[in-house]
Image (cartoon, rainbow, N blue to C red; front, side, top):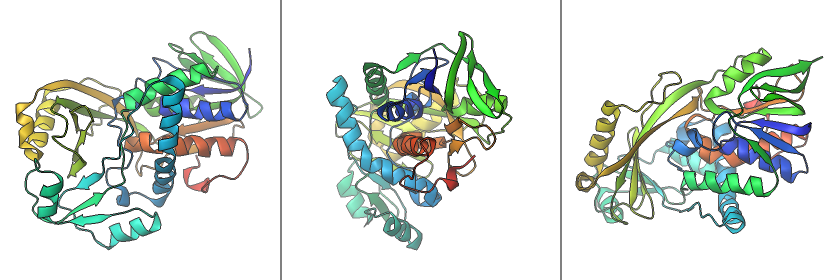
Length: 359
């Protein structure tokens, strides 16, 4: 049976896009090659901010800020609807040994973000278990986090409760195009007709877009993380030091990440990464040495050169859309990306320009 729209991929981006389309009155089916919400959306840390936000193009910040403002109401809506609490927590984001310079100040002014400079004494007051800072640090006090596995579970339950059909273990093997228009997709379970198709398959999106003659500059980037089981309150803020970070959960779990590895579609964890992540974490918070590492996992991010995602319609095939390439910031950009995609699909204005994200 034909539907108005097929969404290929059931990560956060795919599910939020399907949800937004459904809320506009369109019939939607999601096709998922594996299990819903179990790839990069599940594997990430759930930080609702880029790791170094002022270093990204403004087109990334536009999506980030819109999503940050929308997340509290979205999480509450999902909690009320499904009974699952994704644990949105405003924990703040602390950048150790970072000077509040003009680039940071100008970025904060452009996007109305609160930024505070902390001296080493103030850092110790905020986080007594951190090693002493060498110089000033920067705090973004309004940055929040979510438990992204809980968010994915709640979102999956929500869209099913709304009547959106989610077909797991359904791998797309081709696209059906006629006279420059999308007609549907071909899968290992047969053909699915639709007048619109949205590819939201993360690191696998370029493989699907090859069927449409378009080379998306997206590649899989493996990220490995570990999880310590600690006492609640050991660490209060998301903490960045160089390329590594710690994320404290309300229940005392502390996540440490992450690696950036260009190993193709390989999600195998490595002992060398585990040792390195433990070492970096203990260097930051020596007390972590007394707590066990209870989990070690990896995910594949859809990497792009600039971090700016592809959101929009195929330039030659009407009705074929892409929502992918969010690299390390898929969780924080997902709600805004879904809204922008839907606004473009419905041919109406959105909260920002479409051009920076065009295919």
